Length: 454
Image (cartoon, rainbow, N blue to C red; front, side):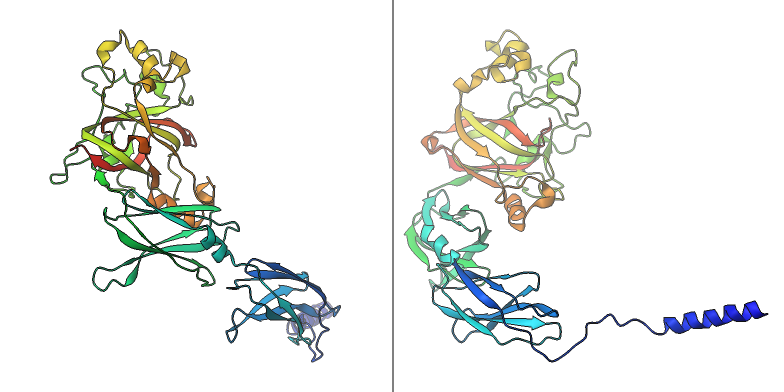
């Protein structure tokens, strides 16, 4: 009975202890901390870096800077903890001298006597970018180019006059933080008109306007389908399995066994949908489509990959656009990293070759079969295309919002202007390298602009 009483007493004491929680909060007081000392100022473009010695108060929370972007404007603050001796402030619109107050704050939220210092920001990044901004005519629009030395997040906005009151209205806004920025604003007719560019940063600082008059170069879309009937008018050249010619060109000729996503979906007009893309069916190395003994295993990769298009009528080319397959995350499907586009009106016929092997030596660069790429001597290169995202990133899980928008909009490339007035009927793609490699071609859409032969 005595033991039971002892246990009962211990239990009561334990519960009593649970009802008295420990107070872990810091003690409070009304004593302000000391002020910061030895303040040094490093003026930067659009801001300043402030370094200082913090007071030695044991309950110091940190240091706060008070400042205004413009005279009479809203008071802004920037805070740094007790473990840092630096505050960087940015976003100033000009190079005027202004006052910044530095205040130490303790854990009771008492503020020290402020220390006032003057800063004189250097030229804001938005104005530095404006100083390098150029605009010129291009096919179907205007081409803007600039240098962004500090990789500042900016919006480059194009304004045009409306057709009713001739008032400026936003046509398109392009977001960028790239060091060497550029963008083509398309969709304009071959007529003289006014173009106005403006740059804005994330603090709503605006550059002076670039206001000019230009005449976009003429172009029209070179359609892969009939405009009225929507029948397909581009065709894969030389891919005739029944006639036995499919293996003579070195083109990636396989198709998915289920028949889905045929090659013609590459020019069906749908640019970004995971329901529509062209998908070749190679599950093993492409060489096994050409060699009899299947000596290469499925992990063996051959490059370049090729495919050739026969267009319905000749056209010259001003620019080209390529959309990779749409898939989440963005940029996770196979994407061409480096490819070239070639053109001719007179490809060598099969009759010029004694055998498939001899033909493949001419049509490919594959060392496994002695390829020479000699066909390039009879074609002209109209575009050399290298895909690079604004951030330079290649991992789909590390893309910036700018990267994602860039991918979804499609990769835009100008064609060689020396062939701007020459029409071609045959176009050959040489895929030199793909991100992640692989033997398949997965492509949402390819488009050309230029001019049809009269």
